[in-house]
Image (cartoon, rainbow, N blue to C red; front, side):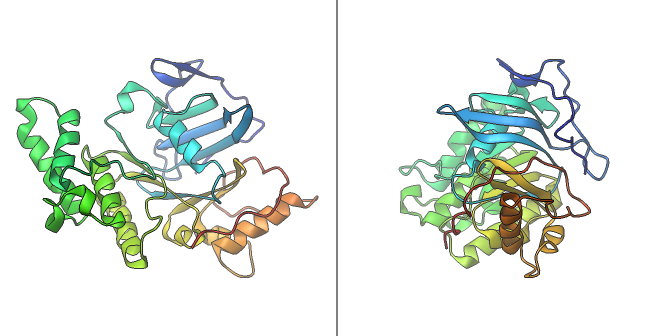
Length: 308
């Protein structure tokens, strides 16, 4: 997997009706470790809100067909970065290519599924009715009636809600409502799924089942998943990790490579080690063999403890 060094010349990103693009119009993107075009390529990505940068000079790539975790404490910029990727974030500079197009381009609307932290469902509709309503937006018209029905049935099965298909969404548990939101995102068989803390508040069994589903989608359909979390033990379930703190990229590497950075042998210990190394003058830790260079964070306090 390749990435640009911070010193490489970067193209300025311009927001237009098509979204965010480089000035020279380049849409090729970088390649992942298997020689395929990367699903996401960011260079010098910065987002300013309220007069201060909340995402700072990020440079990374995300490989296709894999589960990449975006981890860091609450308030570190995960949601802002995800909004930039799906094209809904203002005041973005740098370069951000998504599936070979500038972030926010109209061509991406049917190729990306986005699940926000709050379940996006109508409480007064059943699970099936919710999915049918969204399917009618994706596939309008009588000619697509059979395709809509098939898409709804498949999405219900994907999230294991067949037994609750005709239950009002308002009567579902929090975990079930989250799965309905995921089913909505799966309706169009997207090439990229962006999931903002989809397991927060779920019991261990439901968390395990959702992660099993994420890996099944990646393996069976070649879908790229970007999953954010502030719970460090979920890092072990990812193929690759982006670790954020205070809007800066601490690491872009595999879980195995990060575990080797700390005697404790956990990603959480490696995260704390990286924070302490960044705050201490002198050379930092050696990157793992699959690492991408990224800008280091500014000195600051230790990160928040992850929520249980």
